[in-house]
Length: 188
Image 1 (cartoon, one colour):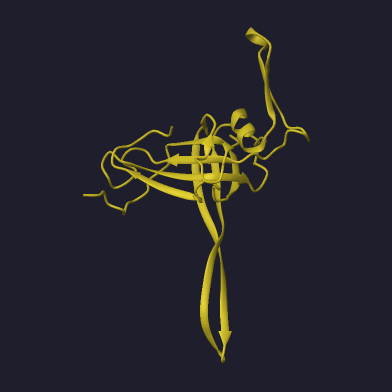
Image 2: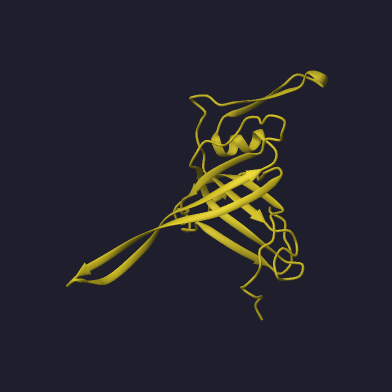
C-alpha cells in the first residue's frame, strides 16, 4: 500500500545547491557536487499563472491557464563563499598559511556568470505526518532572479537571502518535485 499523499510540513532542516553542469535533450541532467546552504532558515516557493479568457456573444466562452514562472526565496543564517560561486559566479582564491590564511571571493565582469543550479530542501525527520519520514522540495534548474541580499547589520546578525526563477529541464521537463519519504533521507 502506498504512503499517504497528504501531510503537514514542519520546518526545514537542510538545503543544498548543486551546479547544473549538463542538461542535454533526452539525456539525464548532470549536477556537480552538492554544496550545503549553511543555517537554512526558510525556503518559500511561489509561482505565476497567466490566464487567457475567450469572450464572444457577450459571454465567457473558455479559459486557458499556463504556468509562466516558479520562483524560490531562500534565507540562510551563514554566508558561504562556495554558495555564492554556485548561484552568482565568481571565484574563490585561498592563500596564506597558518594565521595568515585568507579566502577571497571575487566577482568580476568576466566571471559573473549566473550559472544554473539545483536546490533541494528537506524537513527534519517527523516534519511530515509519517513517523520517521520527511519531505524534500527539489527545484531542478534555477537561475538567480535578483542579486543576493548580502552585507552587514548594525549590532545584529546579518542573514543572507536570494531569489531564483525556475526553468524546466531540457532533459525531462521537470521544474519542481515534492518527494515524500517513509524513512527520512539525507540530501545527496
